[in-house]
Image (cartoon, rainbow, N blue to C red; front, side):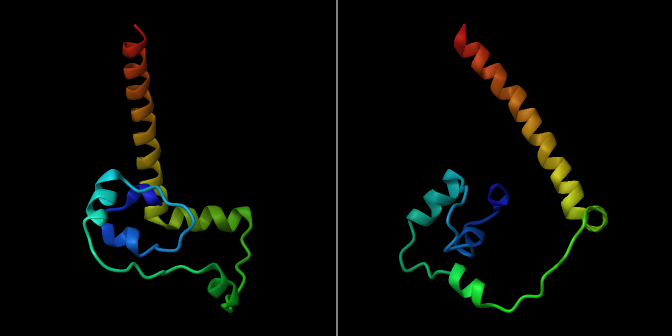
Length: 98
């Protein structure tokens, strides 16, 4: 999840991704650096990989989701954060519309 980048190295590790949400602080940090950024992700190379298909029904998905603390706890934390920010943004907009 792009919004969870902690340092510019994580952004650079996704070089080749079609779209990323990158914070202004990381853009500013990377803008000051010199040198090439090698492409890390390549759709054609990924298509050529032999990867076993993973078949997941709803029951298996829910089990796997509940077994992954990062998926459950961080997802819930993120949703709470977005909800809090929506309330904050609504207050800012109301003030500006006065």
